[in-house]
Every structure is written in C-alpha cells, then in structure tokens.
Image (cartoon, rainbow, N blue to C red; front, top):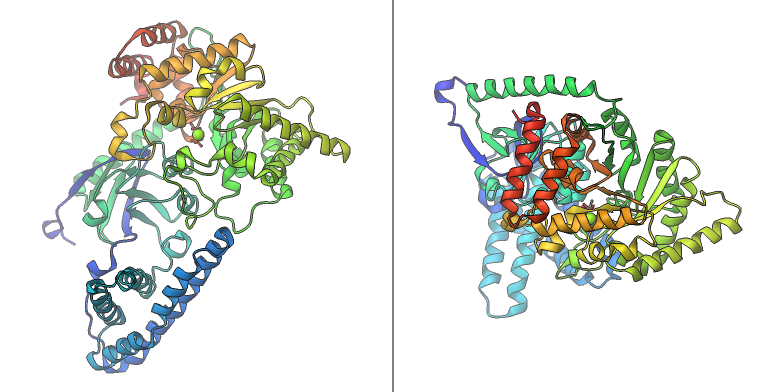
Length: 591
Ligand code: PEP
Ligand code: MG
C-alpha cells in the first residue's frame, strides 16, 4: 500500500513486562462476537457448503462443551453439570437451528450472520422476560453463540491457544492465564498485549522466561486493534503501535541492532563469576519453569537454578504427574547442571496459577486462600509423591528443596515431618537419596520475615519471594494493574523486611537469596547486594545483564545505598538513589 494512503500510526502505552520488539499481524482474542458480525452474501451454489460449515461448527462446539464439562466434573464431583446440560440444550435447540438454516437458504447470507441474528433475537427476548430463571438463560444463549461464532471463524476454543495460532502473530487479549501463556509456541507468538495485568503476575513472569515480548495494562487495547492489523510491540518501553510508519520501523531497526551488540558483549561474560568491582562474590542463579530450561541456565551463565517452579509440571495436564514423571523431570535438571545447585520449590498452585484455564477458583481471595504449602499439607498424597520424587533426584546432583508461602513455624514443622516420613519410606525400600539434602523455605509473607529467627532453626536457607512479600506486606494484589502504582519494591517496609530476613539467616549461619522479580530489576540489584543478600535468582534472559552490573558495581557503594534506604522514609527517594547508583555503575545498560 503506498505510504500516502496508509492508515495513520497510533501509539498506546502500557506496562512493559517482557523485553524485546515484535512486529506482525495482530490476532485479537475474545472480542465480543456481536461487535463484528457482518453480513456477507453467498451464491446459490455456495449454500450447501455454508450449511455444512454451520453444522460442523455445532459439532465442534458440542465436543468442546463436553470436554469442559468433563474436566469440571472431575474437579467438582458433578456439582455444575446442570449448567452444561442447559448449554447443550441451547446448542441443540432444533427450532433455533432450523431458523438459522432457513435464513442461510432464503437470504443467501453467511452462517455467522444468520446464527448471530437468530441467537441474539432469542437472547434479547429472554433477557426481557420477568422470570429470573428465563432471564438467566439469555446469558447461556450468548455464551453458546460466542462459542459457535468462534468456531465458524476458525478461532476454535480460544482458551486453548494451541487451537488458535496458525501463523506468527502478536496476540491481543483482555487477559491471559499463566496456563495459556505456558502453551505459547515461541515461533508463532511474536509478542502479546493485554488490557489488564502487571509485571509480577505469573503471565508476565512466564513471558519473560519464554522471551516473548509483552506489554500489559493497556486498558482498552482489545477494542482499539482488530485482527489482521499490522502492529509493532515494544516490550522494553511498554508500547504498542498500530500501523507503524516507515520512520518508526527504521528507528526500531536501529534499537534492535544496538540491543544485539550489547547482547554479544554480555555473552562474553558467560563463564565469569558474579563478583563486584571490589571483590565481593554473589551467587547468580536462574528461575525456571521446566526441566528443559536447564540449557537456558547454562547458556545465560547462571550458576544453577535458584527457583524451579515445579507447579508447571502440573499445569495444562489432564492428570496429576506421577512420582516417576516428577522424578524424571527433577533428575534431568539435576544431572544437566551438576554440581551446580537446583533449588526445587514444592508445588505452589493457587493464587493466579491453576492446573488449567478452566480451573476457576471458588475463593474470594485466591492469593490469600488455599494456596501452595496450605494446599500441600492437606493434599498429602500429592505432596508426598513430590517429596519422594525430589528426594530420589537428590542423589543425581546438587538438589535443594524449598517450601513456598510459609506463614508460620507450624507449617514448616509439619512439612518437615512429612519429609521425614518420606525419607523413612525410601530408606525402608532401599531407594537412595541424599541424607544431607538442604531444605529451605521461601520468605514470602510478612509473618515469615518477622519470625525468620525462629524459622532459621528449622531451615537451611531462605529465598525471599519478593513478588508475594510485596503484595502481602503492602496489601496490593500483584496482578491488579489498577493499583500497580502502590506495588513498591523500594517501600521502606520491604527494605526492612529483607534486612531482617538476611540478618536472621546470617546469624544462624545460613544464606539468604532473592528469587522474586525484584532480583531481575537491574536498578534494584545494588540495593539487594547492600542489604547483604547472598544469592540472586532471576529469569535466564536477564542474568547476563545482572552479572555485567554486579561486575561494575562497588560493594562499598551498595552498602551505603542500603544504609540510606534503611533510614529513609520515602519509597520514591529510595528508588531514585537505586536508579542513580545502577546507572552510574553500568551506564551501558541504561541507554
Ligand atoms: C515470589 O513470590 O516472589 C516468587 C518467586 O514466587 P511466585 O512468583 O512463583 O509466586
Ligand atoms: Mg510466590
């Protein structure tokens, strides 16, 4: 298209959550179907094909509904079966479907338009009646209609991205579940943009670790962009541009070239240690979601896995992984990285992580609910299988185990007792494991940080999960973009809680690390070092930059920064000082 008539460039700003630049056609998921159902006239000869297309969409929708019903029923013991029965009745309503067929035949219109017009008329008349029960059926009607329309458009079951992605594209959605992000194929997803979301949601964390550029919190982006629009997504600056001009594209070309040259420079440090300019040694590890990510750990120059989010073995699986399947995964990571450590965090489901995107929590506050260690201490068979698998893998390499979301001593004592029982079972069965495997805990709740001295008597190390520690200390939902401005890693309360935790670990002769996203925020690295943190664990793609920064930084300056932060009353002032020291130490990282 000549430039003169090319549609104008439009720029939208959101929250940058995963660096990199992607450009390509947009694929908008989950737009309200009625907003874009257009009439198309078809020829007489095409009527039969159109009817067949409609019938196929009905069959496909039926299969999807049965599948969703089956999964939900397994979880809830059939409690919600009646909803799906009502949906199936709507789908199979002969009166409605015959009317659609008649419309296609008489008006020679496309199936999407025919189905949408009839279904919407049914839904509107149901919505207008007095009877509550019938009024609710209008919602069922619209729900089914949008599924049928998605299938007619070839969008399939949009919740399952594997069915939707046919060519490389930038995904635009209202929101994405971590389980959906985990299904993204790197070759097909050039980037994604969402209306809602925040930097520390698990969707954002997943995007960073998969190196998929992403921008979230764009508020209304799903109504600004249409499928097929050409867009450029800048995950560094949190920008998405529709119809980028030739000039914008050229500028981005230069930016990418600069980033590549920095990347090459950083690669040269792969085998160098993370040691400050004045000789202070830090352990630099990586966070992973899968055993196969062990290669990424080696490639990025990390010294092991500081956080293996084992729950991703459970996500997007129809069945729970067996002990043997888990053992294979842990074994693989431990063997690949030996003698470097692999810290396996036990199952942390709940919050914003569920086994599948159809697992809708029945809790008002899932982050404060039945999550992580709380779930494991009740679902003991699931927990025991995992503990045995981790113990068995401990003979293969340098495996450490850690419990998530500990909020008090009692939980740690109970978890350790179960672990002891598992050790006993393995001994009795003569199955080898490392008797000295280190067992630590995550410090993610203010209660754990404040009682770190007591916890340190029963744990060999602490890894501070700042993502949760910040959300629980400041009472700010980590996934809610509306209150993202309150989510402040440099809040004096957070600085003090980290210091308290590190001091308690050191007093007991243990090490303390940080594996939350704060460890990967370059400008916060000097503060963490100054507070005495011994280990940082971040997404592999950010590890080379962290190492570069550490090697340019003076520990004496980091300690001064921490001393300032510990007596300062303002988050903003602490943040400014952090940024200044990081920039001054490694200006190349902050162009
Ligand atoms: C954290 O809370 O900081 C953490 C690392 O755990 P997750 O992000 O998986 O909750
Ligand atoms: Mg956490």
